[in-house]
Amino acid sequence: MTQRDNFNALYEVTQRITSILDPVELLDQVLEAAMTHLEAERGFVLFDDGTEQHNVSVAAAKNFSSPDAPGVLAASSSVVKNVLSTGTPVLTFDALTDERFEASTSIIAQKILSIVCLPLREQDRIVGAVYLDSTKSRQAFTDESLRFLTVFCHVASIAITNAKEFAILRNENRRLRTTVTPAQLFTGLIGKSKRWLDALDVVNRVLDVDASVLITGESGTGKELIARAIHDNGPRKNFPFVAVNCSAIPEALMESELFGHMRGSFTGAHAEKKGLFEVADGGTLFLDEVGDLPLLLQSKVLRAFQEREIRKVGGIESRKIDVRILAATNKDLVEGTRAGTFREDLYFRLNVVSVHLPPLRDRKEDIPLLAEYFFRRSCETHKRDVRSIHAETMELLIAHQWQGNVRELQNMIERAVILCRGAVLMPDDLMLRRSDTQALQKANMTLADFERHIIESTLAEMGGNRTRTAERLGVSLRWLQYRLKEWSDA
Image 1 (spheres, rainbow, N blue to C red):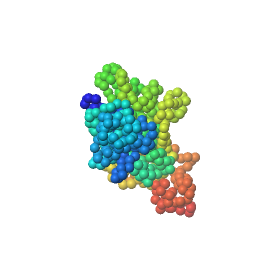
Image 2 (cartoon, rainbow, N blue to C red; image 1 turned 180 degrees about the vertical axis):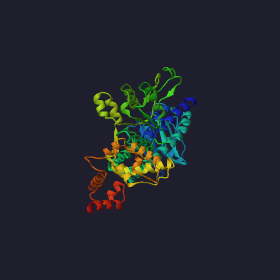
Image 3 (cartoon, helix red, strand yellow; image 1 turned 90 degrees about the horizontal axis):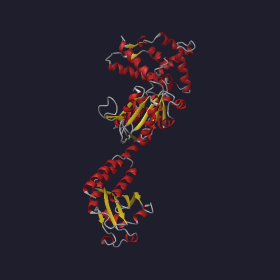
């Protein structure tokens, strides 16, 4: 091997192993890379417990008849002990005639001809070793091999340390998430209703995996917020989050937008362009309104899923990508597969885990929390000195049907804050149309009747517990007790 060959090999190996954060996979790759470049027949990576006895454990091994530690170490115990105790690399061109190992019966018995073994270090401490041998060739390893493996082991040691620390942090993160409720973890996702917290619980459980997630729900329920929460709280948070609305891009431009294009590939392609898959490399690609993805393009998105590679429009070479896919839709994709408008195989690839977001009208107890949040934010954004939301205004908000869900609530509160003339947000500030207020009445139900219906049904749901009922409704216990007393006295 020439110095240039070694340099190119080191560059390729470094690119490969420094991106792997799973310790087991990393050690297999480290061993595979070393054996491939030096054309070794057998090899293993082991770790030392740091005691004077140098108790070792084999972490990865290839081409040994016995995969357990005693079987692997039988070939090389004297070599490994020497490296672990002295920290000095061992290179022997002909082990059978090397006087350092003339007492090693295992080397003689297994007819090992060439050996190279180097220590793995963590700062100034020897933590393990990489061992390679050959039973076919004398001088299989050279001084150049030793120089290559020395640099390689430095890089591998750093990668192994990083992978171990990442594993520790990941396990600690999992432990912490078991002690923190989803509502506490996702501080920007407001709500305390059971259906909302159930959705957040699913989100919590998919943070540290790379499985694709399909987020379903009506328009305005917060699907992109959920996707961002998955990205921002997962291992890809330091990489791009790229969102694309599949219904907002013309079909003729969609392929170029997702996969990029080469210069001159079509009229107007004056320069090479990256697609969103490539922009999101290492991070997360969020396909919003994925149900509107053109059928012809669905097969290409599926191929990017399966092969983890893309090809630009007009290009002839494919490029590997590492992207987590999150998707969202307000359409029934199952019905789409039956109708032939959505590929069934793509649906199953997208829907490894599903998160359904309930409409706002089905989580009425969250409305006071959301209204107060949007109210405070709007007052701050627009510099309005509005102090509070009137109780009747809040009752009106709770009773409204919210066909536009959280987005409609946010817009209505913001508009009301901007137009409010006083210090308290009044019902008239909401500017609900007469048709909207009429929709509040269900079987001639008045607003007061609706309020009583909500309180009594929530009280029954909470088993008569007034404190929990007040918390669920977002009102004070005193206010609730006043209402109940008012009704009992009537």
